[in-house]
Image 1 (cartoon, rainbow over the protein chains, first blue to last red):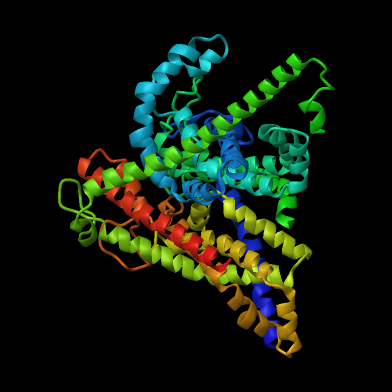
Image 2: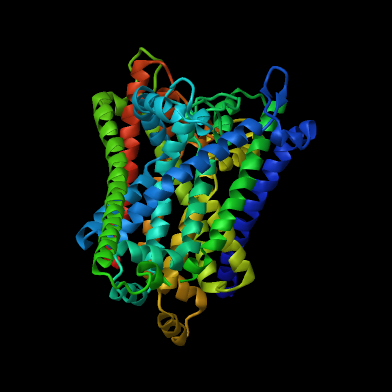
Length: 302
Length: 294
């Protein structure tokens, strides 16, 4: 009797979690439905965001979300690889635990703290030193130069991506470290026995052996970056247009929702559009996180 | 596979072999240096965040931060209502989310190993673990704020509880799976029903691990801002009534840091220091608990 009750309590809680995720998706979709009805599929690509004319589109914020997240991945992956390589192969054993803990603490710092740090420390530093230098050098190059032009505000897409990169660094590094440690020592020892250097063992043995899980870790970082809100809100510059330069201001889905939600009236088309944006963000993160989990499945089983 | 890339065929000429060796060692040294640089850079970011917080936070810290409620710019004010509101919401959210998370984790580890439903629950829980927290805020807004006519502390608690659940699920399942099956067989062999085995033996054996998970969950929700923006909103007056809008430290920091007033920004730094010390302290405590067990 007690057995039956307990088993059903556990099963019920499990079903509750299933229903919860389903309810989040359905609820966001229903709440966003007026926007999808009013603008149709063009909502996704439209770059309008005009509360006066009641014309809303997701184009600008989807662009901002994708650009900042992908740029953050490009910045974070080499760093995360360096940290993971250092912690698994290079660092003396006594150093591994404290340094590893310190890097993991980066993941524990709340998003809002990154926002303040980014806004008061990083953005001014970028605006005075780093951006003018890049504009004067890389900005002069043909083709890619256009991405690095314009006035050095300090805030903008590039700064947001930089903060995001630091925030997702510990997640990617932790996954990489875990999978690097799972490589059977025999494989590495065989390569060392042939006279390979540490880097050659990493490149020739460890990376090929773990590449699927490494990509899974990168996808996990991407999933985190897509939905990050507060840190981005502080430094993105809050502009509802697509700027050709990475130093220009913009918006991500999450930052737009956080910034404009308070100014939306209940039942308005604007509120529905924000909720529709939430639905799109959920679908995006769901896909990326599902892929990440699928790639990491071998690690989860181990 | 690596042998061919490392030494392309036997090299007869000693000078060529030496040059190759030098090149390989140089590549190794460069990569090592870059990796050390990457790690130092990561540590430098953490140091910069902590130093900034300490410097700006201590500058603004005073007794009135803890004894006075938030006030309009220019007049004396503190963060008392925000600190208390954060504590209430984080603790209530954890108190509601933890039992649900423990039951789900128990279901996954003890009842549903390898079952289809179990895999689906595990998948969904892992998605919730990394899902954007702002969307959980929007969901609770639709579910609790709109129908019940206003922002409330309860809505904030609900949003935080949803964030707590998957964290506790993960640690509970992981910890239960570490328990050897012989222990379970011994208990069942004594004639105990399965639920007693789980509650009296498995949970007890996994307790320090589960507590670690709960501490990490408290640390996580204590710093959450986005889900509270649309649920408990914030309240500039003293209030412990969960049916009314409730202040919280992260939301107060958000609105103060974005304001043009010097004294509000200073208070935001003080709040930021408090919350970071709390969150990092809980993390370090949780880690040392887990380590002392293993």
